[in-house]
Length: 168
Image (cartoon, rainbow, N blue to C red):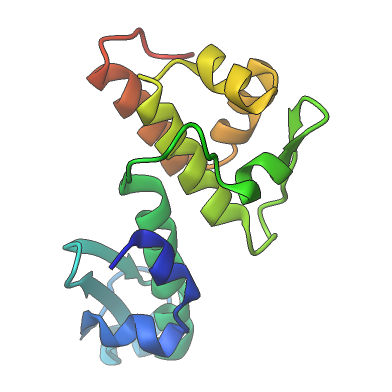
């Protein structure tokens, strides 16, 4: 199954692809936190990605957080080949007027981020080359890529893999 297909799944459908562990989380929260199994760990069987959520005393809230983190992990850590002659329209639409403009709460944020990271990997980690492909400034690319810590880590991993200096 292609990574893009995972975004189209509902939370229930995505959860069916996971092994779920419930456990007691330690830390602040009083006696209730130490007595209920509200923490959630999801193991995504197709990719072996593991995410957890322990912040809430509510198992339901932690499951929703874990599924959101799984979608982010799928976008930020899995690379797919991308046809540089046919860049996804979603990415081209986000990169208009020489700036990459898309809000974190926009439903297309993760697909755009994943496509951008795929393009960066395809272009050997060179932001200037990606900027030329999208007709976008490198400054705009850096601002977007830095907006999420895990996305920025993937940028640095791609650059390290291509023997390029890490970005500050």
